[in-house]
Image (cartoon, rainbow, N blue to C red; front, side, top):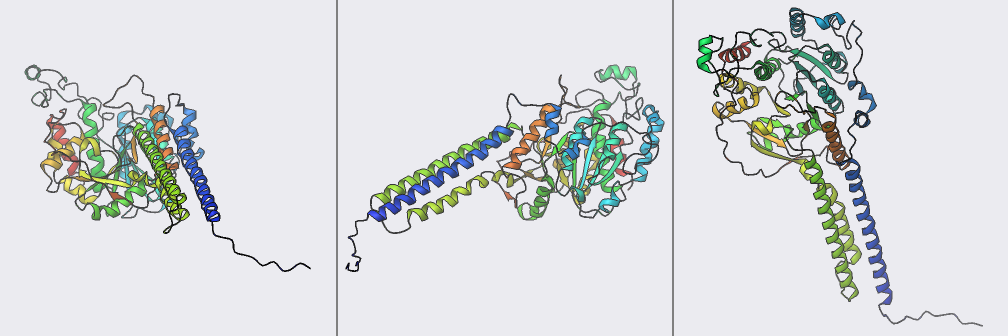
Length: 523
């Protein structure tokens, strides 16, 4: 009969403990390798799929693939039906016979639009709230760019709460049809009434009696042309196609803040865009964060800016730098684990176990990826500079009224650019100069390759639009959009802004007077 076995304690050689530690270490290393592989795989996938490449496809079909099908209707032209436009357009305005309408008929229609102040889709989205965002788009006649801007606006979160105002200086049936087909928010059209289109042979268009641009003043006086006494500071005479943009910008701002019935009591922000801009889907989200934090981060800021003139490839460069940084940090983490492993195997005891230390470091490593994109949550505060902060800028009625008190400075400054003129107002007239809070990661992009100031042999828009779409795709997939909060980064040292000599093109006193009269209309 076998006796009952009695367990006898074996001497403690440490082998079992070492095996357990070895198992923990191996498991930790395997988990770390899997973690590193997954992070690199995600980033490289986004970079390789969405980054710029020499073989990138810039075709119209490729661009359409990056746009939800529901918005394709804004990118394709439609045949005109000649009856009543969509969204309650006034009967007769879409008639094909009016394509060749004379100037007086165009003026009549422009005046009718401006008088009625019709808000499309108001029955669907409700009236404008006093604190709602108003988006004002300055439109000439580059319909291709405008189509893509509308597509980007359609994809923006909370766009249904805004009023979208299109300010035109050219009456065009196709553009009107496009604007009136918008169904994702409230829409209004206003028309600049002193355009070259409606005044082709008289001021503010090009009067045959005006002085040629490059004629000498002495010759102009002998010829007795209309504006002989008033060349610009470079000795040149006015060109209507350049003066119109500044007039139009000043008119639309006056119109929106001081003349529309629906904005009479509006106290919210007005965002200024142009037809060749493109917005990120979270631009209203970022704008709201900036507005909420402006008093805390910059009480003197009176302008918010959503766009900067960065090349799109800078985003990819930044992304690659972050990948390199991530790789270095993960290598450092691996080295720390190896050192800890060596310390454990050599008999070091006490304190935190290897597994516990790895767990805490692994948790730290897991947070690396989101924090790499912290630049997209950063804002910078700086004096407003026209050449840097004129895109996607927003301000309220209080700032506007400070500007209009300096109307003479704006209207008489010899520069045909509205933004340079606004810079002059800030430097020479305002008690509180313009200061801007600008988001470091732009939410408004410039997609225009050709326009008043830029003439290229190839004006195709597909390449730039495709790059912007890819940039936003990278931003979306890597968690750069919709930050929960924003923080102030240290601004680079800015030299004191010197008073700048204007670019000219605005020496004609008729332009000064028209500009100032625009300020007085409706007051």
